[in-house]
Image 1 (cartoon, rainbow, N blue to C red):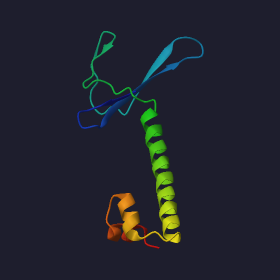
Image 2 (image 1 turned 90 degrees about the vertical axis):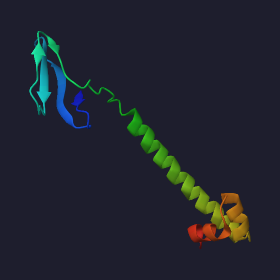
Image 3 (image 1 turned 45 degrees about the vertical axis):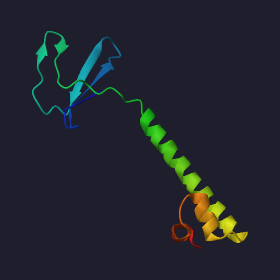
Image 4 (image 1 turned 180 degrees about the vertical axis):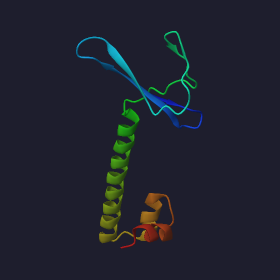
Length: 108
């Protein structure tokens, strides 16, 4: 678990490791400021950042892949429209843009 300051910098990383024989070991890495421990309670500010499931990362990469596929399909559709005789005015209208912008973007 990473603990960050108000600027997004990691001030320490903590994790617990189970020992084969018995018990657990608390590891603290990258400690950049004194750590105050009161009894068994760690008092850290700000609160720890615990969202480490990578769900957002996977969502972003899936969206990027989908966008790349959509862009390839759009280029293929414009290429087919031009091959079938459609004007840049018609293609621009389908894209919601001008003929000139469509031709500049997809000009073959």
